[in-house]
Length: 150
Image 1 (cartoon, rainbow, N blue to C red):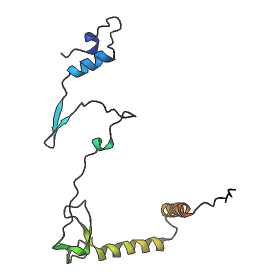
Image 2: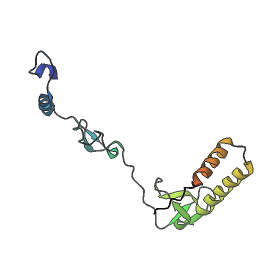
Image 3: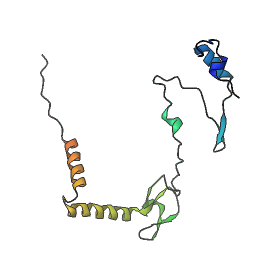
Image 4: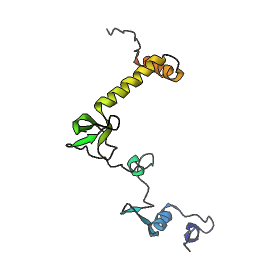
């Protein structure tokens, strides 16, 4: 059984350890280590000495490996099924090949068709119309009065 802070405390009446005793007790506790992806990770590390006492965001996020772009060779487009050189594809670091699944021509044709469908639809899509108005409102600049400094 692991001794608790209250048992080790010198203050029997209060049954609470002061700051120095707590540091001493925590120093005696063995840190628990665990292996994640073949690397040893300390499960209960010391708290950071940051201003707002938070861990940095990098500690909580696992960095996803970025796939390098393939520089030479050929790739097959998933839309037109043509075998094209790698230069005809956009880069995509999230895919294992490092290239997008569609060639540049097919990607442009799809985006053109999507834009045309939005134009034909007009103002029927309320959500699209609201976002369009919001974007227009962001683009407008506020006029400020001119102040002369003498």
